[in-house]
Amino acid sequence: MNLGRPHGGFVIISSFAVAMVLTIVPLPDSVARLRPDWVGLTLIFWCLLLPYRVSVGSGFVAGLLLDVLTGTLLGQHALALSLVAYVCVRLHARIRAYPAWQQMLTVLVLLMLHQLVVLWVDRTIGRPGHGFAYWLPSFVGMFLWPLAYRWLLSIQRAFSVQ
Image 1 (tube, rainbow, N blue to C red):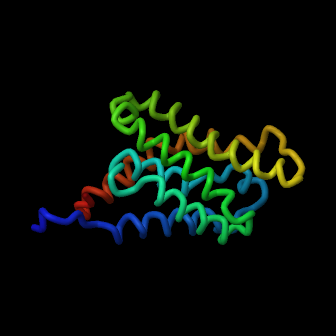
Image 2: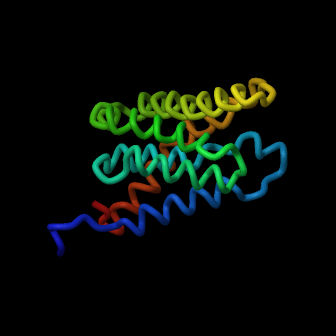
Image 3: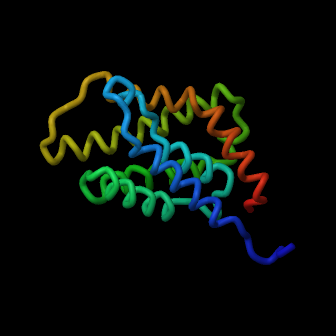
C-alpha cells in the first residue's frame, strides 16, 4: 500500500470519459430533451468526495472537452463547470453533511448554475432563447443524483480511489 501518493486517477478520468460518452450518445428527440448533465453530475461527485484532487482545474478541462465534443463555443462549458467546481469545493464539507433530499436540491442549484452560465453565453453571442424545456435536464439530474452518487461511490470504494 502506497500511503505517500494518492492513486485512482485512471478511475476518475474513466468516469469522466463515461460521462462524456453518455452526453453524446444519440437519443430520440423526445428523450434527448431529458438527458441529464452527466459531466456535471460526475464533477459534482468528485469535487464533493475528493476536493483536493478534483477541483476548478478539473472542471475547466472537462468543460473544454465537453465544448469540443458538443461543438459549442470553446470555453462556454469550461467557464460554467469551473464555477460549479469552485462552489462544490468551497462548500464540500457542508454539502456532504446534508441529508439526501437537501443534497438533491443543492445538485439542482449547481446544475442550474451550469445551465444558466451556458444560457448567458448563448444569449451574449446572439443565439435565440430557450423555453421551459431547457431547464428539464437539471431536474432529471437532481432525481438521478442518489443513483449516480451510489454508483460512483461504489466505484470509488472498489478501486480505493483516494
